[in-house]
Length: 256
Image 1 (cartoon, helix red, strand yellow):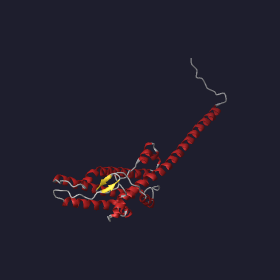
Image 2 (cartoon, rainbow, N blue to C red):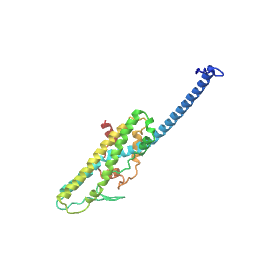
Image 3 (cartoon, rainbow, N blue to C red):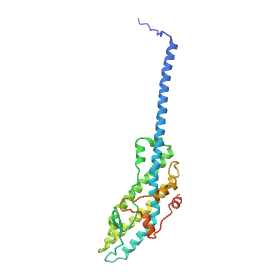
Image 4 (tube, one colour):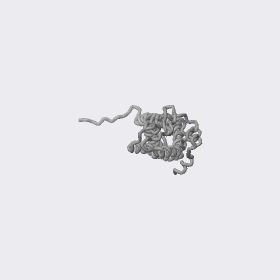
């Protein structure tokens, strides 16, 4: 017959319980220390991420301010070019050419390297998940619009070829005339959409504590260097030609 063995630790159950308690406490302390270390590490990453995001928000904010400011100037340029094309009959009355570092064109508009790299990197390494939920949501909205502004800019750059045609004296068929007018309309439409998107996005900056202030954006905007695609300071050109320029801060307030 089998008999139940009665375990009897040499030092008694109280000693076993004490040792188990010590081990359990040690494990809990170790886990707690690890959790504290991880929390501190993520907090440090989040703080560093905020500083990097502020720099990215600042440069994009400067591009947005510029986009709002030049929108009426671009519209005025397009109106003049459109009038010239519409008044032409069998020959295109060529528009004055504007020299740039990329060659010549007939319409000045900003072309800037919009960036979302920092935000995308923070999303990929998980740092963005350690920002407050409302901040994450607002940043998501901001950088989605930055992506849209970048796409609009690329499409405007792609239209430079047809804009150069406006500076040439050539036979003007009804088809070419319609094509040129459509290209001009597309440029001004993209400019207006970009201006509205920029104003709405700058308004979102006010919801983030670490976002650059409008005064910082204004300072950065004034120091912008020439961008790509023949952009040699569109604002200076607009001012030199007496063309209208918008007050970007007023437009942002109006976009509320």
